[in-house]
Picture (tube, rainbow, N blue to C red):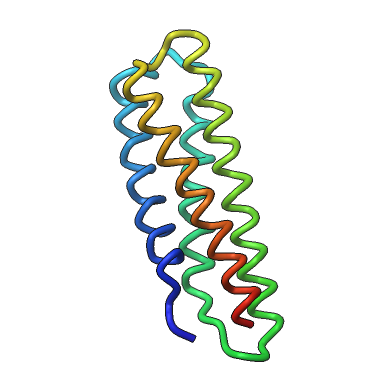
Length: 125
C-alpha cells in the first residue's frame, strides 16, 4: 500500500514538534519540575509515530494493522501528555505565549494527522 499523505505529514510534524519542544526546554523550562516527563512524552510520541510508519500495510494482514494502530494510539496518548505538560508550564508562566501557542498548534495538528492516518488505514484496509 502506498504511503498516505497524512502518514508522511504526521512523521514530519512529530519531528517539528520535537525540535520545538527541545527549544522550549532549553530556553524556558530549566526550572520546570516536569522537564524529564515532557521530554520522555515527546520522545515516546515520535518513537511511536515512526514505529507505525515503519509497519507497511499489506492488504489482508490484520496483525500488522493492529500493531500499527496500537502504535498510533500510543502516539496520540503521548501527544495528549505533551499538551497537558505544556498547559502546566504555561499556567506557571514558565513558557512564553508565542512558543506555547506554536507548540500546542503543532501538537494538535500532529495528533489530528495521526488520527486521520488511522482512519485512512482502516478505510483502505
